[in-house]
Image 1 (cartoon, rainbow, N blue to C red):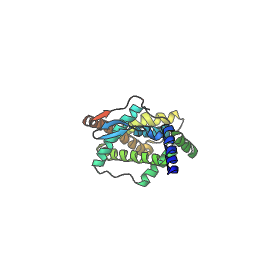
Image 2 (image 1 turned 30 degrees about the vertical axis):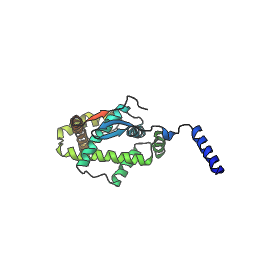
Image 3 (image 1 turned 180 degrees about the horizontal axis):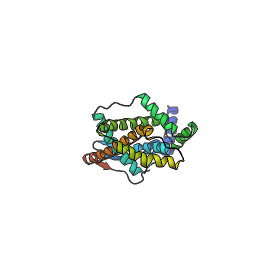
Image 4 (image 1 turned 90 degrees about the vertical axis):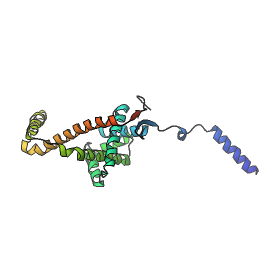
Length: 215
């Protein structure tokens, strides 16, 4: 009994002497309510890390929150439509494209380490991006028509000047036609998606709770 009493006194003394631990600190909080759902500060931080990794810099917290709200709208619409998740092969192709945007594998790994983002988080972000962009593509592509005049104008005002500025011979119009058409389709999809999101925001109840620079 004496040994038990001594041990209990030691434990109590350690508890009293021990300062607050990180586990006792608030590590996350709600920064926005969107209808019946919430967006957390950790969601903002996650997207900021990914932007820093992929682009070398991140948007402001306020801009990231706006982007997360837009993502919520698109994701909910896609889920309601039972839109399928991208395949593992699609995600891997997206990862390879991302790697090719870096000068080397070493540069890719260094930026990832500096950004504090894990391999699992990179894949999760790529999967989400694909899910959202694939859904928007399926929703708006069928309504888009690109005519020959638009292709020729893009070639004249974008392709030729770009080649000239680089001191390169421009590709023939016929050779560049498919690339130009897809670029114009993507531009039109983005424009239609922006208009749709503006209309959708007006129908969604959003309560922002984040200060200008939450830390």
